[in-house]
Length: 284
Image (tube, rainbow, N blue to C red):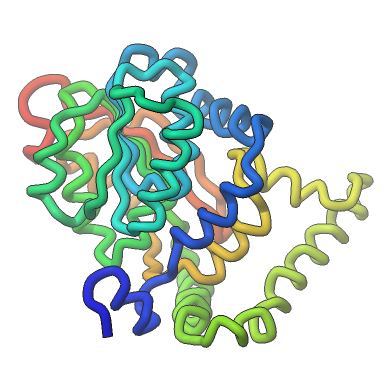
């Protein structure tokens, strides 16, 4: 049995996110890149990355590191624990910014404080839909505040805590990761099919064209198909209520600058926090 990341996947303790992103890159288009750029601008504000240092924690496919480069960041650092995700990010850099020293890519974990300290400080630390998959989300919260400059931004997206429903989804995800790959479509196809038909019926009832929900869920430039695979297999899986996240960072001197919630849904809540203006942002 291999150790580390590969061993966790082999034991069914972790989803192979990088393999899913590899498939996604085969379908990446300029339209999807433009959507990613717009979503980053919507979250952080226009010109928020111009001549700024940007740290992408859990770069995955590399799409949002690419978007930061397109938004004229002075430097982009992309990190991921999954070697396949690191390879995807490198592929995008080589495809769109070959030889550009402003974009650096590293393999490492947000749970490793020494690794984070080695990267330096950044104006924007971005981690969308990642920290709840580390296996120790609150430790990840503790660590992610250290690389941000005084007065800088930390932007997060964290799965909403739905109580019992979240516990059910956690069991589904764990089962998915521990099911052999040939059997996964047989056992889990009914889940996205149920929801897609449900959303289609709701669209029709409101006079909207079919698949409107499918298009909406691609607003960040992601593929609905790959999002479904990511959702079904996304394990480890942790959740938090919005106020829990706000309180955690507030106790450490971070001010909430933006909050977008999903209500009672099972999507992500989005947060942008402003680090303390003076002193070390890593000191609570």
